[in-house]
Image 1 (cartoon, protein in one colour):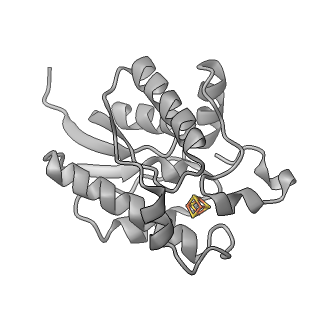
Image 2 (image 1 turned 180 degrees about the horizontal axis):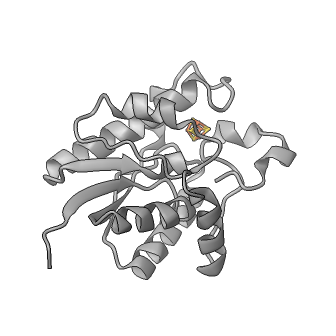
Length: 185
Ligand code: SF4
């Protein structure tokens, strides 16, 4: 079997990792999921998303690693931006937090590339994520929402009975009006 290039995939949740992982496998990467989500609140919600990420890893037969969960450190990091709207400066810092940690983990494991499932969501702007990711060596620009990636992620999540949350992750994202919360991922 050919020596595949390894990639660490920052995994924000199982649904977003469905089509994203399949796309990377199709592009002949050897994919390792990295669940790094100190932004998620409360911890019960974090655990629920983690369990489902493991379920997906089992289905796709790919390894999964978990980062340390430290929501207090994350709150410190975004301090002063609690009232920002979604897609604002708090979210940019949030992306920075997770991408930096994923880049560091990739380096620690000698994995040459990394990217993130975050781009599959229509609620996240890929150019912003690419700008932030480009600060860290090894980051690859993958806009997973292209080629109907988001639609595929919804279909696969239903098929594989994966939990789909109705808010982005932090306590501040729960303020989104109910009508906008459907299909938040
Ligand atoms: S809304 Fe989502 S992306 Fe923005 S800060 Fe909260 S968890 Fe992070």
